[in-house]
Amino acid sequence: MNQDLEQALQNSWQERQEYAEQMQPLVGKLYRNQAVEVTLFGRTLIGASSIDIIKAHRAVRQYVGEKLRLRETFPLIEAMSEMQLGGAQVDVGKLAVKFKALPAGADARAFMAQELASIVGIGHKQKPRDVVLYGFGRIGRLLARLLIERQGQHNLLRLRAIVVRGGKDGDLEKRASLLRRDSVHGPFNGSITIDNERSAIKANGAFIQVIYANSPAEVDYTQYGIEDAIVIDNTGIWRDRDGLGQHLQSKGAAKVLLTAPGKGDIKNIVYGVNHTDITSADTILSAASCTTNAITPVLKVLNEKFQVQNGHVETVHSYTNDQNLIDNYHKGARRGRSAALNMVITETGAAKAVAKAYPQLEGKLTGNAIRVPTPNVSMAILNLQLGMETSKEEINTFLRDQSLFSTLQQQIGYTASTEIVSTDLVGTRFASVVDSDATIVSGSRTTLYCWYDNEFGYSCQVMRVVEDMAGVTLPHLPADK
Image (tube, rainbow, N blue to C red; front, side, top):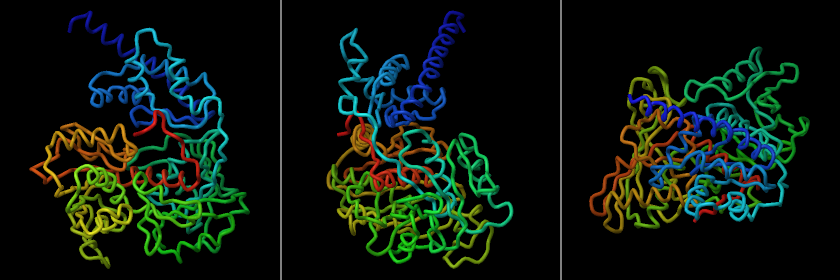
């Protein structure tokens, strides 16, 4: 390699690293001290490594067709750090693209003061809300990670307790170990210690009471200083109003959210689609299923643009804890066969469940599922008959724009990669990610392939519902269309 070229590459890389390292403490302080979450085209920069920040900037090219350099976003972040701001989610990537289009010599501080005028000088006044995790399985532990990663002076949702069955010797250590290490999602980002004397887990400055109980009736949260709490039931034991209503009998509990499809008249909320149905009077809600959250946002925007006439949803889903590791008795058809060795055809109610969140598609979809031998990340294949003819380019361009510039940008992700596979999607915060290279269109018939992290992506959707229930949802700037 030419020596001058090699030196230029090294200098460029070093510059990017230095800017990224300077951004990290500013991003952290903005969140901890002012409840301002800095994102870059939808990707949160809270807790991001310097390499994560660099990669987030590189990804911008596929969105806007040109590079976004760290030296272009840093002055905007620096300007924010010197301002008194109210809580908000600020997409510095979109603002940087807008700032670049201004005449040379434009002042970054004046630009940010104008763009953030709605939150300048108002301070942050929202009161934090106590949260309890009832159950501590796959979803429960990921929710704990999401709650703990936002620790800080102005953290709006505080994980105060975990309720589990058991209480045998060594149980607390086991619970902490499962939070500390995860075979799919990797190590916990921070420090975890246990307090055996007070039966608690300490994580990144959070004191989390571990309560042992066999039913909600046994729990009094107020004796731990917990009041007006939102209880997230991730056990799946109860799915109707009577069962979930037991939580409201516990002192200190005010609202309940189920991390599974609710039955009867319980509202099934897919955040981004029907979250406006949540009212202050709602005490029991459901966050629907991972698959319903994955497909409903995409189906909603497609229906509004192209009018979905009918369709079939086939989910290729990772195996779950409900299946057997090796062949053994199971009350469900086929689910008794080894999850690690077989593709297993099973049913899914996700297609019908779409109508609970988006009634416009009621009766228009069928669905089925195939469980496959992977531990996480699933795919929904949407075979749709549209009300008009279109093309692959039009569909993909539309969905890309929805992922960037709509109110569903947190729900709909988009990739143009020709090499992406399921493990690449572990940890995605989108409800689903459209694989644009795999899109098939023939006249008015289209087939879409949507990846989704059925654990972490779904947990992010649950957290958005919790924020809404708690009344701590922050504005997005610049404003979404």
